[in-house]
Length: 355
Image (cartoon, rainbow, N blue to C red):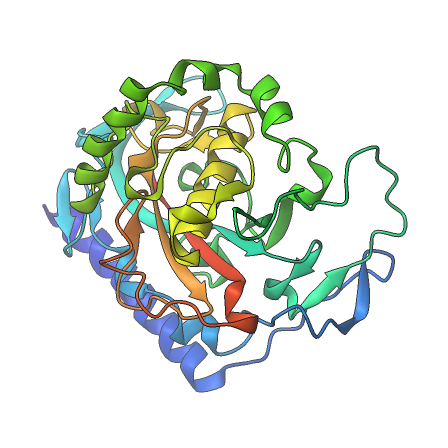
């Protein structure tokens, strides 16, 4: 219990110290853009999310870092994933292969930034810049879906590493950083992925889609929606996205009947994460098996993640579970024009062994 108090007190002190410093200084961030990669001017059709400004402090849900679980005890309120580690102490091998004892630590971390945009190559997170594609030579399409806007909606996505607690030097431990990212980095763009705007091509990269294209599998998502409303989506129903709709196929095409933009873009952000898991590009960081480092996991562990909108209207007091109905969080989160692009922070539960 003494260790728990010391660790949690240290974490809270570091958090408060960093927030006070940033609120006092609010140094403007500068984003260096390589000349051959992006344009030097802002596209009037590409909104600026003002990520690298004071909003990096004011528009973040700092309460969402909690609860922090240390040695089995919890500090702060909030949801703990059902798959989180239940151990108090742990052992991990050192570089020589010798087991070293430690104490378990679990917490929510901002891990990724996902922007969903209507115009290909537009990046609200980079100040409304539009990537230049003059040097790109692919046989894929330009990143637009061939559907009437009244029937289907389509968004491209850009997937960034966003380890905010490391960027702000709030907390870092090598075992609490499973994938090794320490900076803001562009990891994936859907415009270069021909499966994102084609359901048929998406099927060939995830053929299990055929197993879930039936009334029974779709009906099972009702239970997932009910569980997600309480903040605990059902990981076993990995083909469901709760009240947002069906997770498969893993493409950027969604019927407009799915409702509002917050619901559609949340679904597509989840599909993007699920697609990266399916391709071995995303990690499972929750559970006893992740204490000494994350593991590649082929299907999305939904309870490991939570989302909070950063743009156009930030969620600053809470985040939401995957599949949680937009009635509880989505009202007033969009507006015509620039407010139709969306930027989400993907929170990830991290279990690790401190020694």
